Length: 235
Image 1 (cartoon, rainbow, N blue to C red):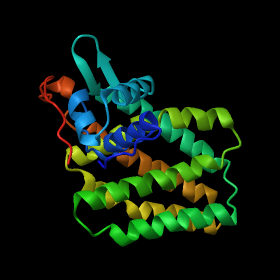
Image 2 (cartoon, one colour; image 1 turned 180 degrees about the vertical axis):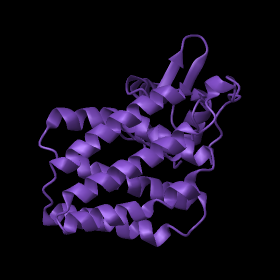
Image 3 (cartoon, rainbow, N blue to C red; image 1 turned 30 degrees about the horizontal axis):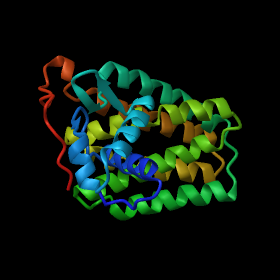
Image 4 (cartoon, rainbow, N blue to C red; image 1 turned 90 degrees about the vertical axis):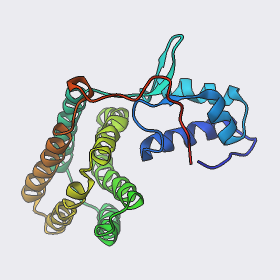
């Protein structure tokens, strides 16, 4: 993470920590050492603590009294339930979809960039693909004329990212990136005004992603967690 300027510190620190969580630089379940983070970002501990509390309110961080603060983790069943909600919401969005030129252009841009990096096998390409996949699906939700549903989707945003983090940690990213063709098919279906086909492909795509996530080794099934006193060392 980069060092921050001495202005709006808590907001900037919040953005830095949130980005580090979403990209996996801060791994699921790792301890957030306030002193180390303050030194890494060249700030005092106060804005770090404010940012951590804010992340806790959003469910990204778990604060354990007299133990410390940790990047949140979720069980396999918890993630599965949220992915099922995601499937229902995105399928509903497509059924109500009325593609405009602007929306199609945004989807085309996401798909084109995914296609450019699909054959690159590196952690950075995984996270770029991750962000583009999220961008594609969030564009679909943005078309809904239902503010409550969009708010709920945003609240679940981190939990969807947890699923993506698990795919990376469990070595499933090459398989997931191979699904890029689904985005092409969904986009082509929209262009041809074939909403039924777009709905079918999206459903299969989301179900396949959920099955990949479900196949990972759940901590509750015996995966060894990182020690609670492990501090984060950022690069």
